[in-house]
Length: 299
Image 1 (cartoon, one colour):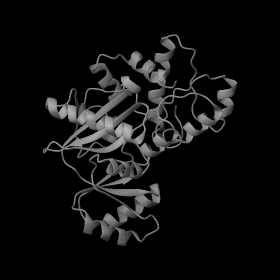
Image 2 (cartoon, helix red, strand yellow; image 1 turned 135 degrees about the vertical axis):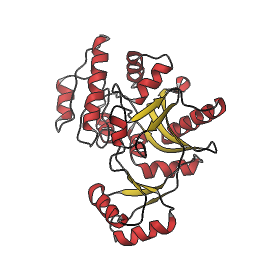
Image 3 (tube, one colour; image 1 turned 60 degrees about the vertical axis):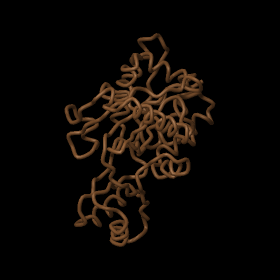
Image 4 (cartoon, one colour; image 1 turned 180 degrees about the horizontal axis):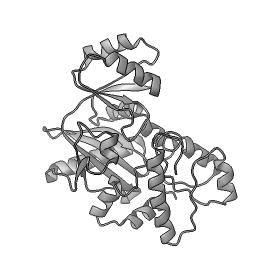
C-alpha cells in the first residue's frame, strides 16, 4: 500500500482497512509501504501472497505486477498487460472502440507540439464544454472541465508540463454511475450499480473524497432493462482489457439510455467511503468477505 503516486493517501487508507480485515480473520499479515527495497522486504518477510492495494502509477499500472511476476509471488488483481491498459486511459479507449463499447469521443494531445496550435485544433473539433484529462492518473487528479476558449491554451500548456501525457474527452451529460466487478471464471459478477450525484460540476477529486460533496444512490435510479445493459457493458469492458479478480467501471448513462464507459479502475479503493465495498454490501457481501474473495483471486 502507499506508494509514490498522487493517490498515495487513498491507498494508505485502503491498505489500513484491508490489513485490519485480514488480521481479524486470522491471516498472518504484514503491511508494506512501497519503497525502493520492496523485493528485499518481500524476501525477508517470506511473503507467500501479495494483496495489492496500491493506486496509481507504479502500483496499478503493471510495474509492481511485473516485479511480482519475476519474483514468482502470487498477487491480487489484474496482471501486467490489463493493469497497464486500464491505467492508460487512451489505450483503454482504443480497445473499447475496437470491440464496440461506447466511450466518449477523444483526442490525444501531442506533448511536444505548440500548445496554442493544439488548443486551436481541439476547439475546431470539440464543442464546449469538454474535459481535459491526464492519460495515466486516477481519482480525477488533474481533470479539468473546459467551458470557454479564453485561457484554454495556457491551461493545456500547464497540464502538459505537469502530467506530460494528456487528452481531450467529449463532455457527455447523464447519470454518473460506477459498477464493481468481482470474481473469476463462472463466478465473475457485476455488483449493484452505484449512482453518484456530485455537488460539484462533475465527479472530481474533491467530490470523491470530501464527505457531503456527493450524494450516493444505491441501487442507481435505472430501469431493470437499463440496469442489465449497464452491467453487461461493464462486464464487457472488464473482459476487453483482460482485467482479473476485481475492477470498477465508471460510466455515464445518457438520457437516451446509452452507457458510455470512460474509465476502468483495476484496483478500486477500499476505504470507508469507497464505492466497491458499498456495492458489495448491497449485494449481501460483507467487507471481510469481499477482501477474502479478492485475495482468493490471486491463485
